[in-house]
Length: 400
Image (cartoon, rainbow, N blue to C red):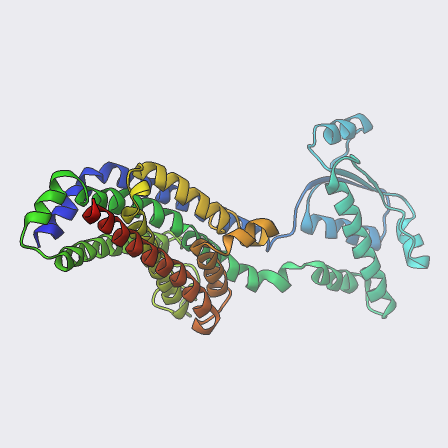
């Protein structure tokens, strides 16, 4: 028990470094929370721009075109001079000047001719986007009118068919809910690696050096009991870190007190939570396995003399950053190059990130067990290397 208490006394000496890494993790989670949520929510909206429309044609078709543009864009229709229009385009106050010439409605009704003129800056893609949008509208409108329905009804049906948000709104809400939560859990490996190395590594190294090592050797405690107490202390610290990080990732994953993935109740209160669902449990198990793997890796570093003499801060930065960049923690696996992913497959972060992707895409245990197994395989390799290194080191000392 004295070794258990001594472990945490030494941890206190490194508390500043641990808290700094915890603070960095929380700040990044806050930043990612906004980025993931914003990016996902934008996918459910059509782009809207400032445009100027001049309608010179007094026809039902022209009025419907103006109404269509007003529904999707911010339309300025007050009378402007040519110089004013040029200035607005130059200073990007508007992205397009659309003129509906006289006779447009008659020509369109007769043979589908599009006489609308769209003036925009050729270097800006927004003007091209609006031209394509207009062409799609007019083609669909012509098709509906040819079926024998009125122009206003045809215009309404055309607007509905071109409004893609009705087809992706449900999926976008799910992704918006899962986006921040997935991002938080995907980033956890950096916090786990940096905090465990800053806390456990220098503590275990100190027990193998100087007066602490000599006192333990001359004491009545056996080697197995010594290792058992240190293992228990390290496991306790790792569990505390895991609980703190999982709690932070879970609480920061929702908005207005609701967790990501919430299903709003019929009363409209929005109360509900992804907590303790299969998705949440799989994400937590994945984080727990990764924490165990990192602990095994730290034990290997402690038992290899060359690594044991290094700085914990250096290890935290080098291992943490390299593993996270190569393993999909900082950069999504989908955009990593083939050469990088070949290296990343040998790291636990890669399989952790792969598991996170599968879990939040609706996967169950059968979909991620192989990722768990490969993470553990890396940890076991590190553990066996560490044990072998410790045995060789002891034999060399006995021979000396």
